[in-house]
Image 1: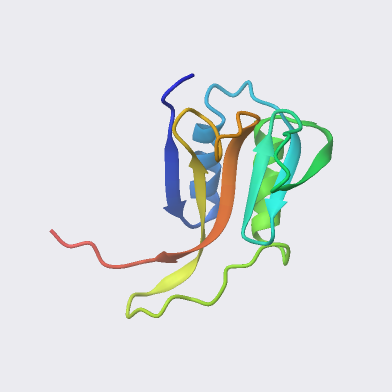
Image 2 (image 1 turned 45 degrees about the vertical axis):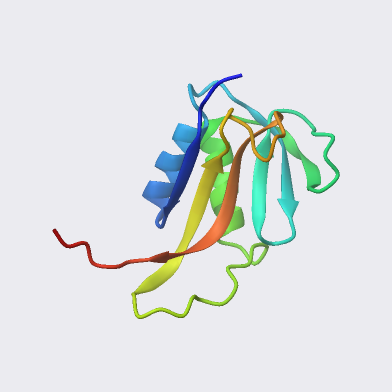
Length: 129
C-alpha cells in the first residue's frame, strides 16, 4: 500500500503526456489491458482485473510509457469517448481531460488499474492576483 494520488484536469497533448508520466510513477509499469466504462472513462491495467463493471480488453502487446500514453491520447481524441454537452458558463472552455489515480495508487479500489482517463471540459478562466 502507498499513498500515491493524482488528479489532473487540463488540456493539450503536452499536459496529457506529463500527467500520464506522473501516473506511471517510476516508468516501470507496463499496460497489458485496458478497460472502458461506456464512453466516459478508460483505465489501463497491469493485468486483467476481476471487476465486471468495466469492459476490459487485452492489448495486442505489453505497452510501456510512451506507447500507452499514445494509446490513451488516441482514445481521448476518437469517437469512442464522449465529452457530453459543454457546461453552461461564461468562461472560455475547450475539450480537455482528467487523468487520475485514487489514493493508494489504484483506480476505484482495483489494484490492477494504475491510471484512469476521462474526457473533460476545461474552463480557461482568467487568473488574477
